[in-house]
Image 1 (cartoon, rainbow, N blue to C red):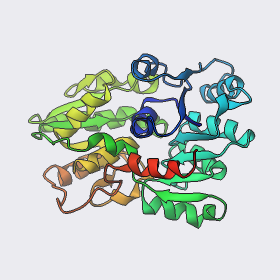
Image 2: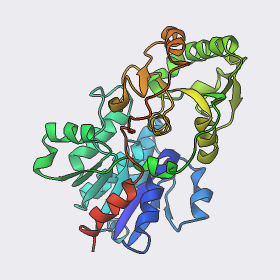
Image 3: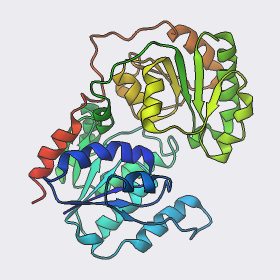
Amino acid sequence: MLLIAFGTRPEWIKIKPVVEAIEGKIPYKLLFTGQHSSLVDEVAREFTHITLEIEDICDMRLDSIVASILKQIPSGMYGATHVMVQGDTTTVFAVALAAFHRQIPVIHLEAGLRTWDNKQPYPEEFNRQAVSGMADIHLCPTKFAMKNLTNEGKHHNSEIYVVGNTALDNLVDQPVNEEIHILCTLHRRENHEQIRKWFKAIDLLAEEYPEFKWVLPIHPNPNVLKYKDVLKHVEVVDPLPHHYLLKILKSSRLVITDSGGIQEEAAFFKKPCIVCRNKTERQEGIGEFSWLCKRPRELTDIFHMLKDYNIDESLSCPYGDGNAAEKILEILKGVIK
């Protein structure tokens, strides 16, 4: 039996296509760790799942996530013969560690992404590298990610496959719309000290280009939320359901973000993407689909360069073709009986 763990909304978006593909074909259980507690009702409407709760065990939130998960997972790990984790969150690290301690094989979805800097993004880069050391099966989104793992020597004692990114399975056959929006999202910890400067740079562009509808779904982290009033010319909205976020993305001229998932989705829809980070683990699209903007003061020049840019229609999305879940199903059929 396959235990599939997730704790955050981005994880669920990428896990769901796998669950739908294996339904009735592979025995499984879902484990929701409670990292994003708002997911409980949404998942419960469609799928039966085991739910944990993140307790305030420690002074630090990240410590509490790890401690809560390890405290609540039983020794038999719900009868699992294999455990699947997705991505790079603290949930992923904690659940993989619990499986490793029980000598249950770990399957890592979205394996092999790297910036080679444990502080960017923090703590995600450490989490994904640590999980790679525990995983028995690595499901990589790209050949580039696979190469990272083979260079680390992971191919000597584990299996590595290239399957594409499951987030793109949600986007197949969705048409793009008239380009009237500029979608902006910023939330990463390494940007918190500069959020006010990022917001100011975005607002100045929104004032300069009122012909676009500038939209920023505000992240609930207090370090982000406290600067929302800087955005005078941008529509600041509450966090959006994924399908509505995609609607805005599909009607965007370009995207300004520090999100990994949105980099992939923008590439699939051929929307130029300005990545507000010093480093990205999604390097395959740099220079053709996405462009790094390392400092707020650089944003204006990069936006001017890209505002009329069109991605070559002949280029394939570097992060997958939208059929990752079916490829994963075929791999799992040979592993889980």
